[in-house]
Picture (cartoon, rainbow over the protein chains, first blue to last red):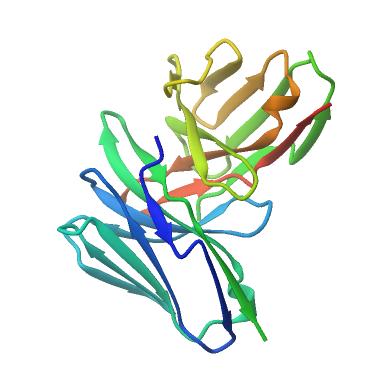
Length: 113
Length: 115
């Protein structure tokens, strides 16, 4: 069943502004990952944060994780038009041989010039 | 980096026919691959976990006889939609993982339209 809820569902900002997306989940996790999807395409892995980490950076991306609140946020700084896409959080949970991912509902980000 | 190739990218088939979708890991071996389904403007729903050399593990509510999965080698998993109906029209995506902090690598997806 769908576990993660993201907000906002849609976000429209101007180029140069920061974009913040939030993700909440319900059960215990091993890690939380963020992915990007351009319309009609596959997903691109952005960043993974482990359950014992609180913050992680990668270029213009900053991810936080609060396991006590079962929530995470993705911050994209100095946004560009090329950042326009849907962003999904996904929680990883080990189930024997493989870690299954459960995806959030996604945030559709529109960056305008 | 890890690359997963998925084919075809688009397919249109007649109701009642079967369609096979291939997912290949190009530069790494994947003992486990995952198949997802995505409806327009919605999230990805895990359909099944494909295990090399053994039977796939299906999620609750997914018909194993309708969505046949074969993972015969460490680099190839196939999903066959049997006796397709219009309600099977969807975007199907596969993925595999290198483990660690690499996350999962996804194929480019297959847009299936059943007419």
